[in-house]
Length: 477
Ligand code: BG6
Image (cartoon, rainbow, N blue to C red; front, top):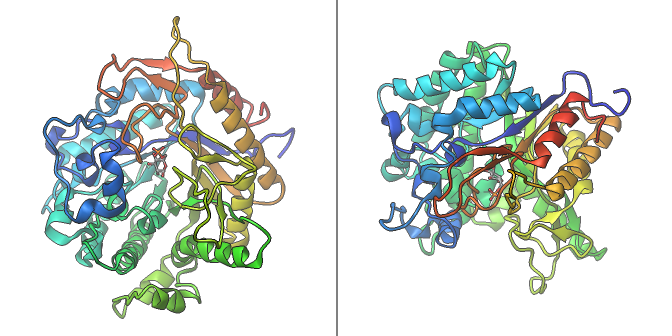
C-alpha cells in the first residue's frame, strides 16, 4: 500500500441482486419466486419475519415494484456500460434460481434463463469487469416452498447442489468469484425471505430456523465440493450480514448480552469457515429447545469443504442492552439492539457507524484469518432529481467516504481485504420495504413507488466521486 492507495488489484465495484433489479418476473420461462409474492411495506413486514403462517400469494390490485424492478433484464447493456464508465473491476449480482429451475425440481434447466446470464456475464467481461455471483440472494422458486416447505426440508440440499453444478458447468470458465447464500445469518431474523420458511402460529421458530440453516450449511459445503471439482481456480465465499456489536453500557450484564448477540452470527460463520459448529452450540440450542436432525456424513462434509473467503454486508452497528425494558429500541435495524446515542441515523433509522466497519473487519479477521470481501455497504436515502438531471447526493458520498477510510485503516493495520462492492450501485428495489424510494445508487433510475417514471438512468454526483476513487485506487478518499 502506497500513497494512501488500496492494495494492487483491489476489487472495486458494486452489488445488486436479481430480484431487486431484473424485473421480467415471469419472462422467458421464469417461475414465481418467494420474492415475487412479497408486497411492499407495510404489508411486507409481517411476511418478512414470519411468513404470516401461510404462503403469500400475489394479490390483485396491489402494485409490486419488484415485478418490473429497474428492468435490468432488458437494459443490462446500458447499465453495465455505466458501471464500466466508473471503472468497475467487479460486479456482484445474483442468479435467480427460478430462471434456471422454474420449480426448483425440474428435470432440465431452462435454457432461456441460462442464456440471459451468459449474456450478462459476457457483457461484463467485455469491459474487463469480473462477475461475482451470489447463487441465492433472498429468493428461491416458490414451488420449493409450496411442495417441500422451503429449506426446512432436507431434500432441498440435493436440489441446490444440482442447481450449483448447473451454474458451475455453464459459467465456470468465466466466473471466478462465487457466494453460496446471501446473508445466511439473516435466517435467524427474517426466515421467509432468507429460507422460504413460513412459521406456523405457536411453532418454535428457532427449531425451523436452525434446521434450515443446517441444510443450507450442508448445501453450501456440497457447492464448495462441486466448485473444487469443476472450477479448480474459483473462489467460493460465504456471506453474512456483518455488524459491530457494543455493550450499551460498561455494566457487565450488557457485555454478556453483547457476547451472546455476537454468537448468533458467529455460529453461521464458524460452520462455513472453520467447518464445525462452535463449542457453545449445544447449550445455545438447548436454551432455544432446538433438536437438530443431522445425517452421519454431514460433519465430514462441513469439515472438508469450507469456504475460501468471507464476504459480508455492513450498514450499521448494534448496541446491546441487558435491560429487556430499555425504552429506545433501534428501529429499522434487523439485528435489533437499542439506539446508540453517539451515532446518527439514516432516514430509515439505520445508525451510521464507519468505525464499526473497522471493528467488524478486525473481529472477523482475528477469528478466521481468511480473506475478507465487503460485498455490501451504503446509504439508503431518498434522492431528489433536480432540473438539468442533477442529483446532489453529498450525504451518500460522505457516508461511503468515511466507511472506505476505515476500511483502508483496517488494511493498514493488517487485515486482508480483497474487495469492496457498495450496495445498490444503481438504484433498485429495497429488500426490507419493497419500495423504490430508498435509493443507494451512483446511478439514479427514474422510477417511483407507484411505477411512474421513464426508467431513464442518470449519473448522480456520487457517480463521479466513485469514478475518482477507483481511478486513484482509493487515494482520493
Ligand atoms: C441486505 C440485503 O440485507 O441489505 C440486500 O442483502 C438489501 O438485498 C440491503 O437490499 C439493504 O437493505 P434494504 O432493505 O435497504 O434494501
